[in-house]
Image (cartoon, rainbow, N blue to C red; front, side, top):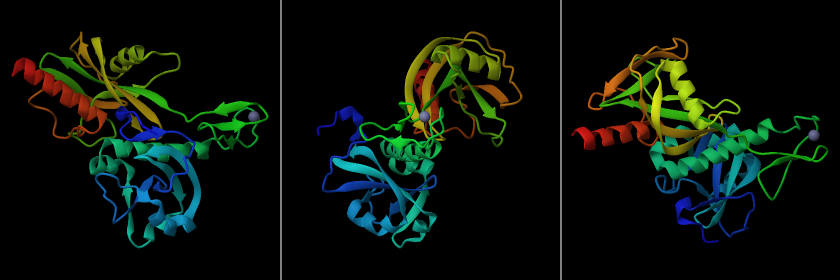
Length: 283
Ligand SMILES: [Zn+2]
């Protein structure tokens, strides 16, 4: 199969092409098991011949699609697999820094699909067991003729700007000095734009305008799709909600807080975009 270039080598599909080789994403809970001999920064997943020694620990296998021309499966492993010689685990989030966004998004898909199978074993209407379908990733109830698809929860995340400054907030659970963009889940029936206006107003009491979509990122805790925006503030006074947000401030583009997300994470990418644009405009 020729995969469109913009898909970065990955084609999402539940259908195996039964290629001679396979790439295995070995998952233990929320962690990823890596082989020491793998090329961690380019393709940290496990060749199927190397993965054979893990088969004894494997609880189930799900085809994710094709990655770099070969079938790609997720293997759900028992915790004992972590002590196999030649392998060690890495926290899923750390794959983003180790191997980059393409590998991270594939590992996210692996973890999300396992989680979705675990939480959709029974039909929500009649309570009978669901069965995984083969033509698409769906859990089906044959009695009700209902298909359940992987649950993806859209969220907005926004850097609000005011001239040379941007508004960043500290979550009540974060250490002092750590700030990020405003984010929140979409409510049922809401557009992304409505969610942006509501979340920014609820969390920091600011109104916004000139909303620009910048990009998105899948975030598997447990299945968010982060939709990233930059918007301009039409009011300046900050009133934090005091519950979810402990503090929020306007930060000059040359004086950002000491701890912000790296550019590989969408919050960091949005902040970097603001700084780059401000640098072009203001020097
Ligand atoms: Zn049913």
